[in-house]
Structure formats: C-alpha cells, structure tokens
Length: 177
Image 1: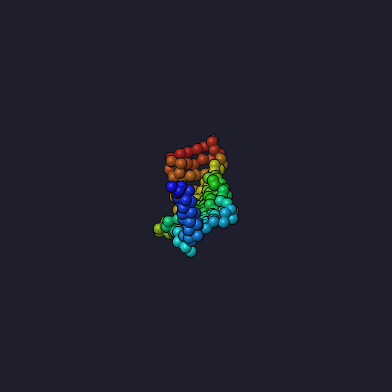
Image 2 (image 1 turned 90 degrees about the vertical axis):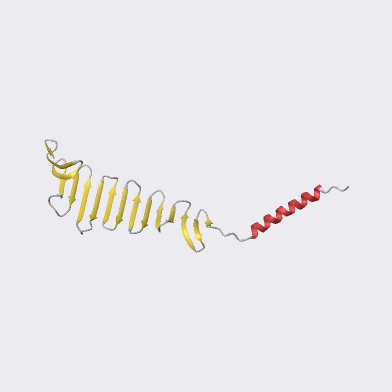
C-alpha cells in the first residue's frame, strides 16, 4: 500500500499557499493610508479623510463627531474648532485662549487673564487680571466696575467671596463687606 501521507501534506501546503496568494492579491478596502513616518491618514469612506498625522505623531488633525476639528503640533500646540467656538493651547498650561459667540478669554499661566463677555442684551463685560497685583472689571456701570492695584489702592466688587474689598497701602488699611 503506497504512503499517501506525503501527498496529503503536499496538497494541504499547496492549498494554504493558494489561499494566501489569493488573499494577498485581492484589493483591500483599507481605512488607513500609511506612509509612516511621513504621513498617516484614516478615512471612514474613500475620499473622506477623518484624521491624519505627519512626521511621526508630531503634526495631527482629526475631525470628531459633530464636525469638531482638533489639530496641533505635539507637545506645543493644540487647537479645537467647531460649531461657533474655538479653543487654543500653546505650551499648556502657559497660554490658553477661547472664543465663542459673545465670549472670549486669554490666559497666561492663569496669572494674566483677560475675558470679554457680551450678554443677550448687548451689555459687554471686560475683565483683566495680573495676579496678585492688578484686578479690573469694566461693565459700563460704576456700581459693578472696578480697578485695583495691590498693595497701593483699590476696590474689588463681588469677588473673592466678598461684596466689596477696599484697601489703601495694604495691609495698613483694608475694609471688607
């Protein structure tokens, strides 16, 4: 009786190679376009690029659900945009900025802060702080506006848990309400 084991193994190997060859020659419907480390892109549908990275992971851009675009240069810059607002971070937490309808803000290490807000009636409120020396808010109404320079003199209204803080030559004279 002839030994058919060798021929069965040969047939199995031939079949495996044939299946492998067919799967490698069939065009793949890939969702990633890869030229790493220069550029890598992801797409949900052909012709619709959802995200990309360039120069390794340094430069990037991504569109998330709701058409919010996130882009940046790692680790230096991050920016988000979408539906009427924009946020930016440069060397976070050193520089941050935010813009949307009726509101904008800028901060340098949470020590220098600038904000502008416009309410539904069109009244604008601007504030500017240089911690811990200068505090200001301008609303157009003297009852709610203030400017203060610590330790020289100043009045701060409706802030720091107090209705009013007033000082001259701090700490020699301080009045709180």
